[in-house]
Length: 173
Image (tube, rainbow, N blue to C red; front, side):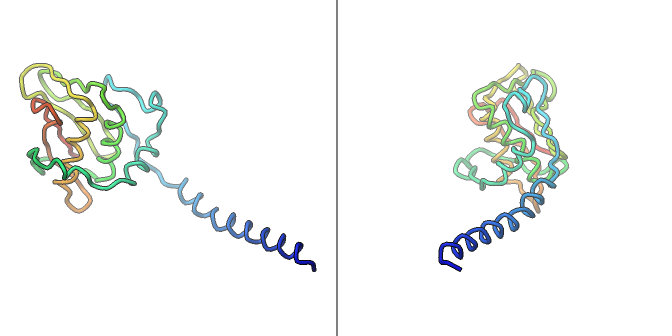
């Protein structure tokens, strides 16, 4: 057999090996079932952002805790049922993707901002008036709660949104 034929066969075998070894990984990945991320009333749908629940979970799983750099915002942990960390992180990722869109909080009651699986993220007005905060600033509050209030891969707590102390951000399960 000539050197060229041997090289061609080797390349073909190597390509087949890589294709065969990659197949289980792809099949395993597609079998992961992520809980649905549901935006709160009045917030954009995932479809309008051209993103899926699975993608939010995948993106969220790729970053590390970074909220400690602004740890001067007081956070209170617990007080509610704890939610799985990954579910909270998917909501945080959704709210962060909204950027400077206003997350509007009514003067009375709670405003649900995101539900993902067992996690709920909502906000309350502390001023007694309608309040707004950029959704990315609410996401920052969620990050603080995730950083300060993680308990065995579960999270629960509350803090204010970044730049608006009248918007109380809560995370629970």
